[in-house]
Length: 542
Image (cartoon, rainbow, N blue to C red; front, side, top):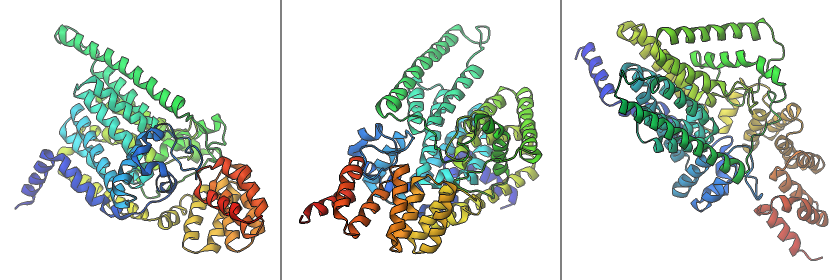
C-alpha cells in the first residue's frame, strides 16, 4: 500500500469513526495513568471521607462541602461539588477504593468531552477543524492534572456536562435538557457559569438577527419562544443552585488566607493579570515546566514581569479582534469562550493557588478551536507539510502527556518532581514532607515541615505534621508545643488525636480526659480514635 493510500485510509477512518479514534488514542496516551494511586486531596475527599463510601449518604452530600474533617458534624472546605461527591459515592460503593476504576472512568469522561468538543466545533465550522482541534486537546499535557488527578474530576465533569448542554443547544434539542445538563454542570463546579455565558453568546450570534425576509415567520417565532423558555429555565436553575449551595449546604465563597496571592491587595492582583495570561499561553506552547500548587507572586513589577507580558497580551487580543473581523462570528464566539474561561482565574477574586493547569481545561478548548479556525482560514490543512508538522506536534504532546501522567503515580514521585518547579510552595513543601514521613525518611520530612512552617507559620496542618516528627523522636515537649499551635490556629483533627495520645502516653489521664471532654469531642463527636481514647480513660479505675 502506498503512503498516500495509507494516509487516505487513516483519514477516512478518523472521519467515519471519530469517537473510536479519540478512545483509542486517549487510552493509549493515558493508559499508564490507570495504574496510578491516589494522591494529594484524594485522601481527605475520598479515602478518609466516609460519607462518599455509601450511596445512602446522598442527601448529606447535597448539603455539605467536600473534605473529611475527622469526625466533625459536617464536611469541611469551601467548595460545593455535590456531583463529584455523588460520583465518588457511586464508584466507591460499587468498586471500593480501586485506583484503576477511578482513573479509568475519569479518562473515559475526558474522551467523551473531547468528542463533544469535536461535535460542537464541527457544527460551527467543519469536520476538518473539529478533528484537528479535538485531537490536539485530547493529548495536550496541560490536561494531565484534570484527567489523572482523581480530586480534579470536578473539572472534567463540569466540562462534560457543559459541553453536552452546549451541544444540545446547538443541535436545537429540548430546551429543558439544555438547562438540566447545564444545572448539573453547575453542581459539578461553579465555573459552569462560563458555559452559561457561552450559550448566551451563541444565542445572540447565531440564533438572533434573522428576519422574516430570510426565513419563515413561523420559524422565527419558534426560535423566539425557545429563547424565552431558555431564559425562564435558566433563572429557575440558578435560583435552585443558590438555594442548594447557600441555603441548604451553607457553603459560601471564602479565601484561602495562606496563599500568597490572597494576601495581595486587589490592585496588586490586577497587576498580575498580564503575567497570569501569558503563563497559560506559555505552557500551552511549551508544556515543560508543569507543576501543582504554584504560589508564585510578582514581588517587583519590572519591564520583564509586567511590560513584556502586557505587550504579549495586547498582541493576542489584537489577533482575536482582527480574527473576529476577518474570519467572522464563529471566531469571535471561540474568542469569547477562551477569554471568559481563562478570565475566571485572573485572580480578581483570589483563589487558593496563583495558577493551576486544571483551571485551563475549558479555556484550552476555546484556544485550540481558535487555532483550528485560523489554520482552516489560511487553508493550512490542505498543505502536506503542515499536516506532517501537525502530526509531529500531536505525537510530541502525547509523549509529554505520557511522561507527565507517570509523575502522578504516587505522592512521593509527584511531590518530589514538582517541588523543583513550585519552589517555596508552603503546601507542596508540607505534602512532600508527608510523603517522606510515610516511607520512613523522618529527618528529611522534618526539614520540609520546618520549611513549610516558615512559609506559612499559622497553617494548622504543617504545624501538626511538624509535631508528629517530634512525637516520633519521643520529644513530647516539642510535639505538644506544635500540636497546641495547630489547635490554636484551626481544627485539624490529627492534632487533637495526637495531643490526646501523648497525654495518655505520659499517664496524664485526668488532663487527657478533660481535653477530650471540653475540646476534642465537642468538635469531632464522630471521631473513632478520640472516642476510643475517651472510652479507655473511662474504663480506668479512679
